[in-house]
Length: 396
Length: 93
Image 1 (cartoon, chains in turn cyan, purple):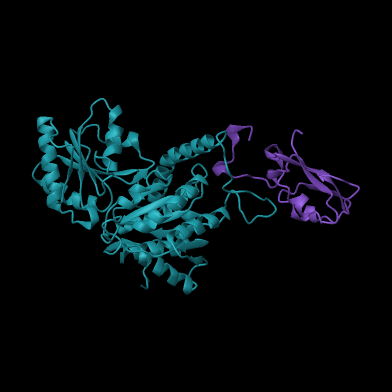
Image 2 (cartoon, one colour):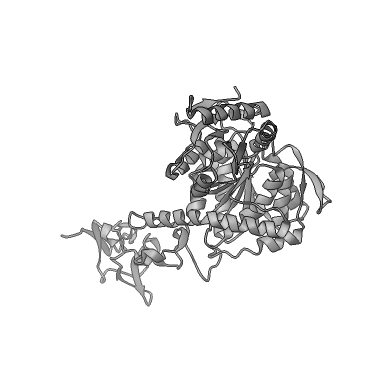
């Protein structure tokens, strides 16, 4: 797709916007293996490489395991590295995800969220990235095409920040965001260059004058120290995400925080939800607000590290909360977002009532009426103080 | 690795040649013994040693680096049949 407009509004799909962001970032290396629904990111980016529009070394590989392995090697050599995948592709990268984060390599991965087999399904679902939530990658969840595009530039700055040095996964919803055209605004190439700056790696495997070893064995006398360093780094990433989101806002007028609050300040009840489904929920909030119901939304943007304190603070005045997960963690106790939010609230003096609702698995539509149904249930819980069903599947 | 507070991030080893500091000779069960009178300094043992534990000075084989020799016995096997200047003996004998 030829993109001629650089200012004002342009209509792009999520995949095209991400590929265009990658073109503007102009990474040194991209190793990727296309998979639905992220295929067009890799397809369009390889077009930019073929046209000479970027200086990127594009490595075609035989699997996602190899894609991530090549990204790790290139990043250890000091390159700025990006890739994209979905679902089974991310699952096949699993082993290498931990190596990227453990080696503290600032790789950027766009994950277009799709369900994991079995049964096989190509549609939107968060089971892929949520399964990787403890792999040491920073995770940003994008609601819109605009946010996915903007997140990519911020991800570069977050990953390469000297206090962080960790890989970042930018997530957007399969088909809903990746294939739908939205009006959005693009940045100028020069603006992008100024915002992301040059990447200077701490070490390079290719610097033979200063030889280094990556991936050496550590025994019980040091392994725990390296994991502690990594844990401290991902905890520090929270403030870095805030600072960079603010800087992005100052420069380009679109500020991003750790989370988005929609009509939350005076709300009696709230839905906590990630990514594009928040947009549907906003319509439900607008409808219910017209009827005088005090309902609101908390949409965490950063899921790893999880902003525990900020989430608890945002929900402190609310009487009842429902956490909507587009994935089941198969723990018998609701989805991952539910568990993080519930855990965040434990320290609060006035804890709201809370429930888990699993929705939209495998691309099942989540409609305004579904959100309204949850809000109505929450308003009843707020009134009676009783949660009748703690965990439940909806949109069935 | 003594100062744990200043470990390089990501487990990177920031200088080269550190394998030399890791003494692996303690793994050895058999010890190579050189008969200098028989040795012709062909240096086949030096070529074949997987641990670079053959010490050579001025083109002459002068002995073994026992801090790194793991006692595999390759040097004794590779020493030419007509020479057989290296024998393996039990450690502690």
